Amino acid sequence: MQTDELELIARSLRQDTSAYAELVRRYKDAIYHHCFAIVRDEAIAEDIAQETFITAYYKLNSLDTSRRLSTWLFKIATNKALTQLKKASRELVVDEEVFDRMAATYGNPVVHTEHNELHDAVATLKPEYRAIISLYYWQGLDYEEIARVLGVPIGSVKGWMSRAKAELKRKLS
Image 1 (tube, rainbow, N blue to C red):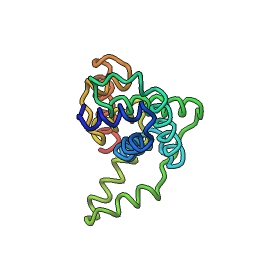
Image 2 (image 1 turned 30 degrees about the vertical axis):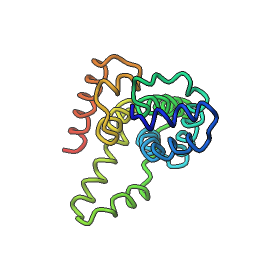
Image 3 (image 1 turned 45 degrees about the vertical axis):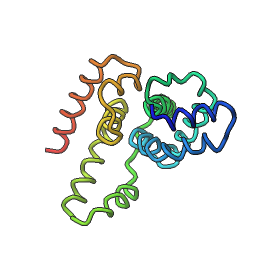
Image 4 (image 1 turned 90 degrees about the vertical axis):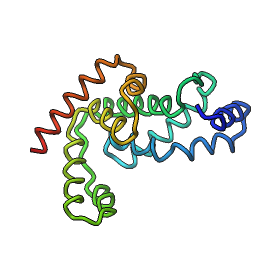
């Protein structure tokens, strides 16, 4: 963990709200995007991201500072997102407007189409597979970190990733 991050955590534990606000600022976008990749709903993803930072604030003293703060935050967010999906117990629809806005950042219409197709295909995967894809490809975590985030053996991560890729390949061909 970075020295300045350790200092921000220490100050946060001493009730310095500006220090915690800085930690939130650093990770809010990544946590939101990860939550969105799992739940596929902007408002719910925002709520889960906010709940993640509230939970993290109250449990900050339990953080193992030998590990990355981002891994711990992704674990909290993933658990909350998967719990939300279980509660909802319904199939989530892809928000086309969000994908259109995201894809509009690309100038090439072929890239735009491929981007939409990929995100549409990922959205149809099981929640665990969506989480794996998000954490690995979009958040840059390695398999070991993903295993810690999801609380599963690394073999499960490898198996899920293999099945997710196979399913995506089938859907995209």
